[in-house]
Image (cartoon, rainbow, N blue to C red; front, side, top):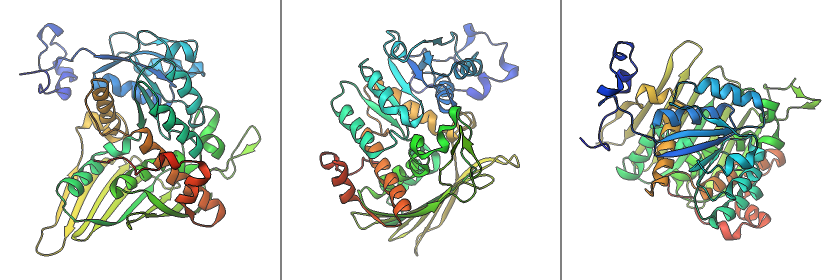
Amino acid sequence: MTESIRPRMRHFESATGQQHITSADHYIYARREPEYTINVIGTGTIGTEHMRVAALHGRARIGAIWDPAPQSMVAALEMFAGRQPDMPRQHDTLEAACNDADADALFICSPNHTHLDVLRTAMASGKPIFLEKPMATTVADAAEIVRLADAYESFIQIGLQYRYKAQYREAGFEVFERDSIGPLHMIEVSEYRPPFLDKVGQWNKFNCYSGGTFVEKCCHYFDLMNGFAQSRAARVYASGGQAVNFRDFDYEGTPSDIDDHGLVIVDYASGLRGSFSLNMAAPSFREDLVLSGNRGVLRASERFDFLHGGGESCMLEIERHEPSTRRLVDIGYPAVIEKSGHHGATYFEHMAFSDRLAGIASHAATPRDGLWSVVVASAAQRSIASGAPVMIDMLIEQEGLQDLCGDSGDYR
């Protein structure tokens, strides 16, 4: 049996009753040697998730970390203890972490508003780079990153990992490979979730640091919508505001201004229409995707009922016109992968990044994909502020994006 098809028996290799099997007798339990070394920049919530997932995935090891908040590095190393044979080193400066000769690649997981500056420093290393979402807080900065990436000797992958969630991957297969519901004419997405979590310095409570809720959180969904539409947005209208969350919160005398709900309508150049609804004052997590085609409707849903211990569940339903059948199925990844982060999406995002390092093509998010998710999200923020629709061609002209205005990337 070759290494490429040898099954991982994770549920057995970690079982209490199997710990008497020593490494000398590992075959089914054998872990491949890491091929790459990654340095992680920013060890907050998502940075530590990437560390954990890299260890689980096994193709890369974490060589070193850096964060300007020392307590974040301490907490990250405590969490990471025992996940790989050697512990990551701590760097004193961003420059040292980026130019570390032992590192094959860099993961940038710092706060949104720092991305462009951190990326410039990281790019001086010439190493492959993973840049967390949103790639930037403004359209101008996102466009600058695309231009830098176009001239970069290596590659930059954007952390839009929702495209790897099980229900969305399966939906993409049904739409693009099986053509199960015919050409699409409408995309509907909704998210119900609790408020933003606490962060170091509470940067995610302020539009100037996060880019706004529809940039910070919802860029994932606009990436999905762009991918299913396979077309560029032409017009965006949104209505939203701050109704519940953080209305009594201020940080060092500055009140929070982050939106907690909204509705967004996107008209695409192809004639397809999309909508997105958000409620960030819900008690638990729920996501829904509805795709309408000329031969039927596809629904994909995810639930995470942590309040009542219900765990995570995903489903996909396809209803088609006569004489076709209806199908309703549960969707998911192996439990150990789903629990590693973002219901398994981060794991497969790491797989895509490792493939890129190995010279294998992947469907990971590119800087241009990231740009168009920010364009739609920023247009939604502008529409909420002005009360008027935003014409994307006008936004492109205002921001000087004419050289970058191709269609969004291939979702498939």
